[in-house]
Image (tube, rainbow, N blue to C red; front, top):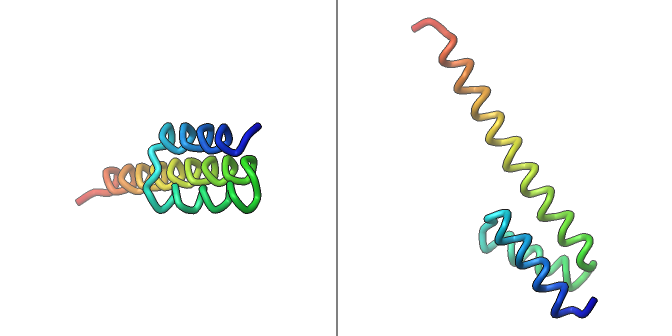
Length: 69
């Protein structure tokens, strides 16, 4: 795969994940230094972290709702 094609694949993954500009920069550096696989693994980890944070927040709100006031 050409570098240009790798960059397009990475850009589509970043767009789908709705990550910030800082994430785009970090993913671009990973693409240049370590290749597409590492960059895509980074995107996947960011998505996993976001999901874990959302779940943690939902769990916290659920526990607060259960406590008597």
